[in-house]
Length: 396
Image (cartoon, helix red, strand yellow):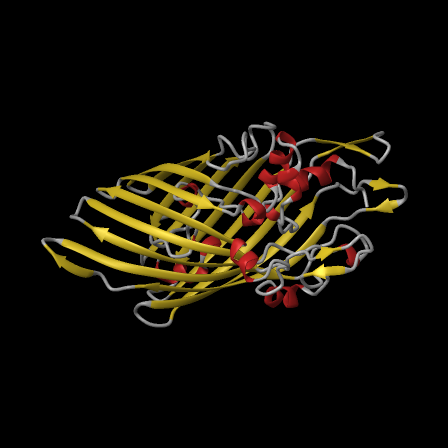
């Protein structure tokens, strides 16, 4: 349905699992593209890091020290935010700016503590695909539109003990890729769905190492975007999976003295979405499992359905590592790296970032440097900006 509209093509281009793969194929002899085993989902933009702090550390976040954007990474961290504070974050990312100049991602989040055990956050994400010229299957103009996708989020974290917490989140997803365009009498509609998050977080005790130095550990597990499939028409047969994801990570924190602090992080990510099976010319499955299942069944099936067996399941794991250095709690320097197997999309890149904190005001920047064997990545030169405000609960 409407397979040749530019809007649908844009949705495919930004698909997280196949973004670099598609552009890599254009620059090779096709063999790279033919070897791909990517997993595609609807609204892939909701799986993109929204804030510049995490963006500067290789997109780690499930076990990082809590901040206002914890609602995206792990809602359980909200319970460990500093007491008697409320925080606001505004983030902006020009997306695929190497290709076009009017696609962008905006994110706003607000978080506060009820008491020393409970935290709550609200957030909104808005992704604009710019102005699109629609065309039908005969390449005839069908007018212009401004496709967009929107999410509204709420998250809650609760301390279960002095060092351990859990959190839950709810997300409303709205995706309007065609602006109601009709082709050959077929009507398209915006897609919408609800998704839930579940997270756990451990923040260990601060232990003295002598000489005024301290260390601590953190760990986190977050399962996100588990919800019903999303469809852009009246038929549910063509509905697509949301980018349900499981993220597991750990962190190590070292305080050299009152001025110098380091944190080191590592995350593992896996899509909880079925892997497409291999089929013959008749459409019969030759390897793998049928991916035409419910969203809930797909979460469990995603662990053992890869046509290549256990080795391919391991290829579906994305590795993220990052580090952060703070001087006097005012200046931060960050770096990180993400690795994704070439056959699963090949998103491999370094990131760098800086942060400034002065009284209630903070500013973060992040920059992405492609490291994939695929040349001229469309993610090249990606910048993220975040503006932060931290207030005492009593401030007006």
